[in-house]
Length: 165
Image (cartoon, rainbow, N blue to C red; front, top):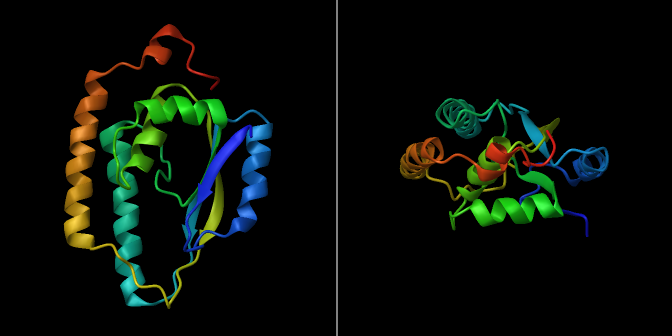
């Protein structure tokens, strides 16, 4: 197909947003994603995780020199050719690939449309993320990737053929 995307299996971002994202791609965006708006449930285990997520998004923005973007949104769609281009530039085998995809998209000049959408935590879900050890690993990856992206200049951006801003 023309578009490729994914939605996290935990469905904390509803599939109801898919048609709106595809519509944005039809209108000409290269990437469309749900920028999560968290519904705070008052459950303390989620408050800590949600605060950590907000901190992560800020650190990503500063270290990677990208606009405020929900790089790890669980609902993203791409123009097929854009995703194939970005995957060639992405090297992380783990969940850091989301950060790489969106950063490369931005630095390559692709247009990224973010639609607000609620991210609803399930009380039944047990997270596999350890905020301390996974957070440190993510920070290490961010610093390493930030250094790498500062040294590289995107060939498509330099030549002006980055794919439609």
